[in-house]
Length: 307
Image 1 (cartoon, one colour):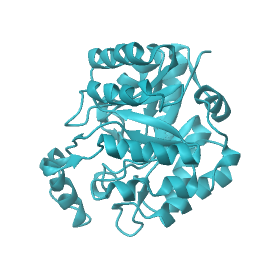
Image 2 (cartoon, one colour; image 1 turned 120 degrees about the vertical axis):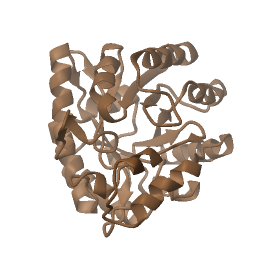
Image 3 (spheres, one colour; image 1 turned 30 degrees about the horizontal axis):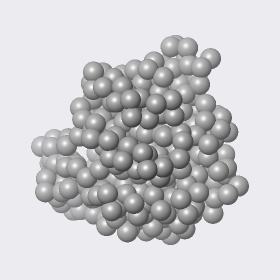
């Protein structure tokens, strides 16, 4: 069957502990869920760190090191370290893990934007931790910073460590931002991007928007263009399935979506991966293995990371 890259985003920085009891917070739990996701069929795992005491997103590189070293020791999945971090982090904190651990793959957000999480406050009245409502309320006046100067700095770090950027585009303009660097020869082929849909402040999770993103990417980057798609919340599986049919990859995981089906919360990342594998099989596709993914993306190899 044709292969696609299946990415699992394990914990992220959007959902808070009150929202789901299954969201992994401690380093050992994040690593264990990443390993289980890989065993279920994930080609890559996208990793954020959390404060193990209260679940707050953190840029602490010791915690990130505990997570990625545990994953690396137990399986051969491609590890993608975030540089998106959380809304409580500076750009320096967000990128600090890349030169330390030299991953094969790391995310790179392509533009500044409003990134709003505050609507969740209307749905929950009691919180496990005081930081949660404060964190969500803060997003009402938050600009997710990714200036051209920031991008230049981040990509220099990636080049030095041999890390492949997994670009994240939240809207059409972000693809044009990337083309500015691509046209100057500062991005190596293949150009690989996640379309992030459904975040308030970015493009919506609709099939016409996804098709428009794909067509724009093909126009800008030609035959060297590779993409995957994130549909936030209830849009995760419909957008992922559409993305596969359009020739791209898919991302699932508790970072993006807490629900296995209507009214049924996912109890693990592996459950979400297993469901995506089943849907893909029905459509005639199967996830690429980690080594196939390395070949598709021209990654440097797991033996060249520092984990």
